[in-house]
Length: 141
Image (cartoon, rainbow, N blue to C red; front, side, top):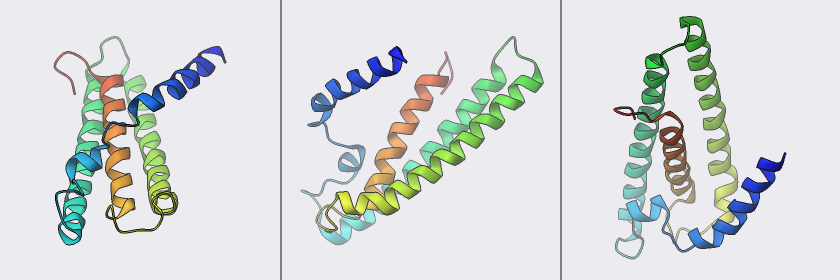
């Protein structure tokens, strides 16, 4: 319980420090530099790229599991199955968050482009980094 509280406290304190950092969707598609139609196209392309990058990170994590020494084949299979099941749940959460919550958070304006696509790009980037940090090894992800 204490590690959870410490983590929550650290996140709360770190939040303001990261508030000024541009989100991945903003880096991919700068609303100050492109118009509405180009922004829509940019966000669609960036969301497609982020989905492919996420799938690649999951594939790399599975390969990392396969390469782990000291585990039985059945243990590796269970771990990979659990990772894939968890990833499916995460995708369902991301899609619900981006489809149902993000538009309200953005204020339902088209000024910054489609908030659903921005949300997908941002969540995918976070998930890719999370998978890399958890499964990276020398020559891995």
